[in-house]
Length: 346
Ligand SMILES: [Zn+2]
Image (cartoon, rainbow, N blue to C red; front, side, top):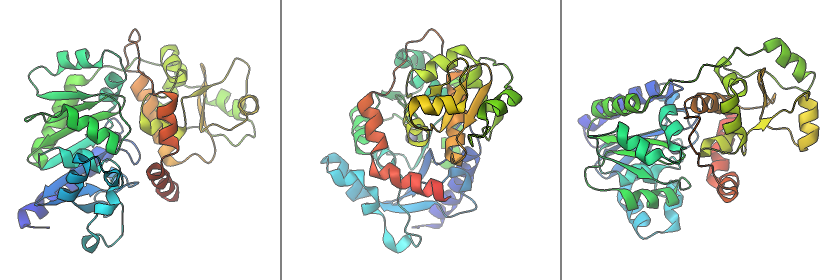
């Protein structure tokens, strides 16, 4: 840490990170990340850690920023492994910097917040995202970045769209980035953008816990950790959107490709027999959601996120889904397998 002022801002960022991490409408599980530039060092959330733990655990990793930006500029694959740029002397836990470190390094402001804001994602999956956001963020300098895999491809997508003065990025099928010179300004901008993008959720019926318990039988499937998760199975429009494919990367990472909906009359055992696998979650129309018994806390958080996102999407909008190749590159990505492993251990 270069100066006392930097140390104070890092403390303020940790407090803000914990607040962001505690709000499921801003970030879920190990998703989202925050950073502070102190001289040539970028302090960034570690991969696989949860923002909500920012005050109780050491989750920030120092990264040498200049060589990392140079690697992005020359399209060096090394930029896709930000752990190679971690400053070992200041990283006693040996944590890996976030997969999205390059996003933060490219934004010139000192403080960068990247969140998987439910209101943003619900717009970022609509084919008309750019025009819808333009209408809502009038007067704010922002840019739309079409979907790319997080890591070097996304960093290059951002570099193509970034212009001086742009402090807000809407990442297609992914989320929101805001940047400012101080932690307080960044928090203010985050909430301003979020409130401008906010849409009400469609109301859903109550889940039927007794019916779900009967459908689970002795399959080992269980109710979700959060009651909000059920809404995606209870609202017909949300269910249709979920069943049609994967809308954003962390869904694929934590829950697999798309969503599985039970057919009329099917119990859990019928669904797993039909598919030949046991999906992390099964949607039962009119009843609610069941989670596989060993599903991680991250999977539960992402199942709730899916309900929160789909409930806000315009039911008449055309949606962009991740392609089969985009699903595959997420599932087979070793950086994500590392994050999954930490999540399972946690
Ligand atoms: Zn992200």
